[in-house]
Structures are given as structure tokens and as C-alpha cells.
Length: 93
Image (tube, rainbow, N blue to C red; front, side, top):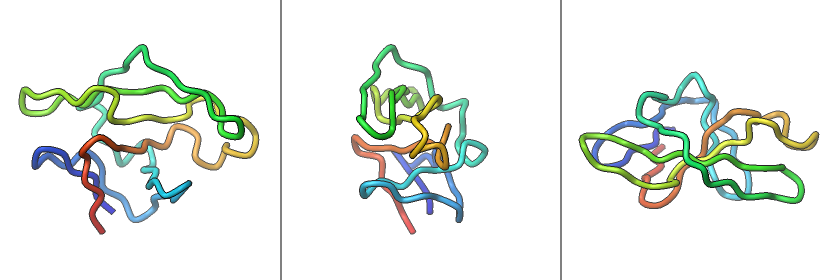
């Protein structure tokens, strides 16, 4: 699987985990230099608190377009720190 935005590959892995229709990429497969931590968070009753990131690539920004669960609840520990994308990020097989 590959996550692409504005022609830039953000992450690529054959070990993604699908959760609720989203592909979560292992942290080592994500180009962390393209992500800037945001102050945005959200709470899921079974996953815990999500932390969001703004994608910065080729001079463009996509606010809060990536998220992860750095301190998930027990049922979500298998994808701790994995990163998922939305807001125009294309997930390719």
C-alpha cells in the first residue's frame, strides 16, 4: 500500500492494518519529515485519543490530514503509532 498526496509518496508498506476502512501505516514506513504535529485531537471510545498531523510537501500544506494513536486504549494497541491519512491523500495498492 502507498499513501500519496500532491504526487509525493508519504508512506509505503506491505504491512498496513485496516481499521474501520482506513489503512494504518507502520511508523517506520511513514516519511515523518513530511508531517508536522498539530494541536488537533479527537477521541474514539475504543481506540483512545488521536493526534493529528499537517502534511507539508513541496511547499503545500494539508492540515490535519494524518493521524495516529500514540497512547491507544487496550483494544487498539496493535496499531499504536501507526499513521492513517485522509483529506485528499490517495491510498494506492
